[in-house]
Image (tube, rainbow, N blue to C red; front, side, top):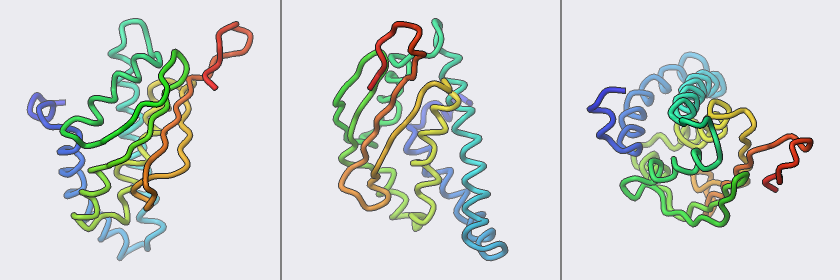
Length: 168
């Protein structure tokens, strides 16, 4: 990533991406229909998210961990992009609720709420896949889908034979 891009908040980068993706999505939708357009955009964003997860893991000197993954929260929230409440943070679990999501607000303002889930929400699980395949996300609601909050529940699965306490 260029130094200029590093100066932008994640929210600002997502705005730029959405401005680029919007006309591409509209063209795909006209040519192929909504389902196929969503699939193509979703696959492309998934690849970016997996790559971002791998890059984040590669920056961890001792390898990926829940503590290292948790350290990404300020990046996601920078510029008041998210108002969140951390409910639990352990070696194997990270639970938080998002009560305000400026990503969702921005996508609605830009007229891309139809793919807001693809541009941001769906990245989260794919980021986990790239960061550490043992890291799993459970989320039952999102503000982007009209809920009052997003409920993020991350678990770092450890083999039972290891004797380590699971993150449940």
